[in-house]
Length: 382
Image (tube, rainbow, N blue to C red):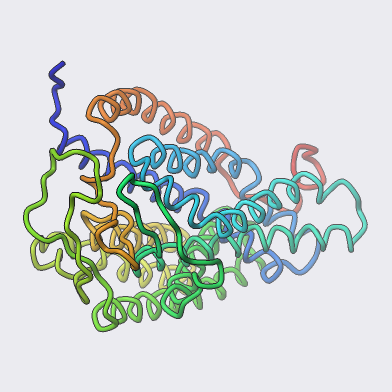
C-alpha cells in the first residue's frame, strides 16, 4: 500500500512531534515541579503553603499527560530508543518515578491532619517530588549528549555497561542543575501569575531572579563544555532517510565538537539557543520588575529554547553510544515501520488538538489567583 507521506518525511515529523511533547511537558508540568521545589522556601506558615499548593492544585494532574504522551511516543515511534533508554536508565527512572509518586500522595494526604509535623513532612515530600525529577531529567539529557554506555550485538540485543552513579558525571550534573534552575525559574514565574500578591510572591520573585541568573550562567557553561569538552558524534557518509531500521547499518564515529556542526549547516537553528538565553533574561527582568506576564512568558521561552537546543544540536541522533558509536540510534535507523508511523500520525492529528482544546478550556475556567482567604471558604482546596 502506497502511503501519502514517504518514510523519511514521517520520521522527521515524529522527531518534531517528540520535541513538541517534551516541550509541552516542560511548559506545563515543569512549573508544577518548580513550585514544588520552591514550596518550603517561599511559604513560611501553613496558610501560605496551602496557597502555594493551590496555585497548581487544579491542574497538576492534567499536566502529567504530556509526560505520558512523551513516553508513549518514544515507545511507539522509536522502540529501539525506548528499549535501550528505559532498561539502561532503569534505576534513574525508578528514582524519578518514586519522587513523582510522592507528589500525588503528598497532595492528597497533606491536609488530612492539622498536625504541623504531619504537614511539614508532606511539604518536604512535595519538595522532593519537584526537585528530584527536575535534577534527574537534566542529568539524563546530559548523559544523552555525552553518549550512553550501551552496545548492540549482531542480533540487535542491547547491553548496558553503566551504573547509576556513573550517570552523575560533571557535565551531566551541570545539565541537571541547569534543568533545576530552568524549572525553578518557571515555577517562580507561575507563582507570580497565580499566587496572591504579597510576601509569598515577593519571595518567589527573589528566588526566581536567582534561578534566572543561574540558568543563563549554566546554559553558557554547558555550551562551552560542548564546544571544547570533546562531545559529539557524526554519521559517516550520506544518511538514508528511507533505509531499514537497523542501527548497525549506519556508520557512526565519535567527533569532538560535532554537536555544534548543525548550526553551520542550518543557521536558522541558532534561533533555539538565542531563545534560551533571551527567555531567561526576559524572565529575570520580568520577575525583578514585578511583571508577571513578562516573567512567565520569558521562562516559557527559555524552556522552549533550551530543550530545542539539545534536539537540534544532536540531529539526527536520538541516543548515541559512548562505548560503541556504531550502535548509536538516530531518527532514521531506529524508528518503527512506515505504516506504524503513518497510523500514529493520523491518531495524533485527531487527538492532539482535542487535548490542546481541553487543556486550554480547563485553564480558562480555572483561571485566577489563589488566595489565603479562599482557604477558609472553599472546601475543595488542598
